Length: 275
Image (tube, rainbow, N blue to C red):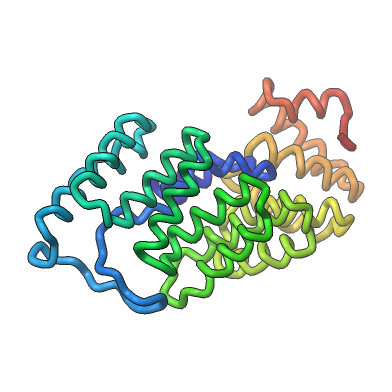
């Protein structure tokens, strides 16, 4: 699954648990790289660098990744177990094991897996991101924020938008909208086309009563192919609050036509604009 497809499929995201279908794909680094200090470039592993045990484990892990992305979680876990049997020091395998246990809602095992991965490869930004999200799901918001900050502090980390987005969602869950706004704005600077970031900024500004700013972000999404029932409904509420009756009517018609069975359409029909 590509990052764009994953974002599209997991796009109603005020409820942070909806991240789970895609977070593992985006935060999984299954290719084996030589360990490097935090911030240093990881050396590319060539066949002569690998031991026989690591080679066997890597092949098993590649199979596990394929199963995991296909939704075959039990098969993925079995391959990870075999990878670790071949090479108990394989940090990537523990990282994937953590993601699998998150998918299975076994959060203690997921936590143990990510901590093992970090003990083997301290400062790995992908693992830090995953562990931060797990801590957020456990409502350990302070610890989660520290992990997100650690991941973002790695100068070699390239997936900053992903981590800022997850950090903003976690801050929203914690009720810290002021900090979430700052985090989402940082993410938006890096990726103005990211619909998850744009939606959450629109939602925060709507809740704060900054309607023109909310309108800017939600219109960008609703004028694109990424519009869905949740974004259209937020757009309806924003335009209504601004007194933009034509735009409100157009969005309402889209919502009813494209998503007749959605809960947002039912709310529109009830006139439940303040729920």
